[in-house]
Image (cartoon, rainbow, N blue to C red; front, side, top):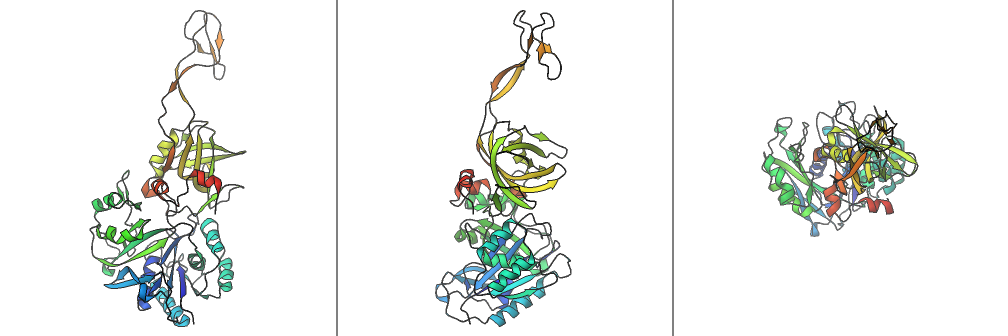
Length: 453
């Protein structure tokens, strides 16, 4: 018997209810509050998967921490949840734990929804970390996950088509290159589906009071990002780079009664889903690339903004959609010749295949010029007239010609720097500009130029 066991599971929720993170709290309760080895894990996977449920998050926890060095990471109905970074000596009953975890998932999963297909693994050896990187960046087959699980000698349980086994395996396999944390609070069961009571002013002040937190409130749209809109059990969640301050941040938000809360270790805000573009991009993948603006931005119906970027010998069409809000205004100020780095998802749409921007870094700016008038005739000094589209200018009296109008250098209305989509439209995995600036693990464009996972 092992002294620790990894439990991974995914796909218990639906668009209309439940939350897979809530199942973690129920498994902990069903196992009679074991000491966890490290924080439970909330692992986001490829955000472009078309059959995902909401945030495409998978969950894992490891039981078998030492009670001697345990510390509090949560509370369920008044009882503390403890974790330790030291392994305990107590042996774990793999069969009993697998049965209890399976029962908890069967009781909670939205089985009536055709898109809910849970998967569960229990093992003492983590699957290869390479499987996580495939699952967070590419489209992975269920059979690939099963092969990895068998290599790790894992207990496997699947329901319906079993697609959740992919996320379950990836969540256990995750070996963090960068990490953040999230404290998630949950509602009393009789409040599920009802209007949430969370103080908006407190949410808007979180980033000021606790600077290591991020994605709390969208000042541009006045949207409270810590609280979901779905009828799931979550009340609110606060993300940050320092787990020690999250309980205080949680307590600073006035709200309805919190039934339970738990701190998760996560890959949110790490850019783990981003691939450095080197070959032909694939549908449903996200990329980083840098180059020069080739054509000036154009806006189409709906407020979406597009421009072409020269990347080596390739021309990439970049898109800033209406939902990104102020990011579109940054893109509109670009001119041909500006040096940029872009992060985004590669997808096919009405405008063809585009890189849909999550953020952009302006690396260099060329001089801007504004037209001050038509050229002046060198003989009579009068202003020339257009000779027709593409034909330059001509003085009607003297018959002299010129090719270019008169310009003067204009002030630049944009600065070099890193710009993200508005807070409420950011993807869970996307590293926001403010986090990239202050986080030592943040990947700005210069880091992406030098190395990639």
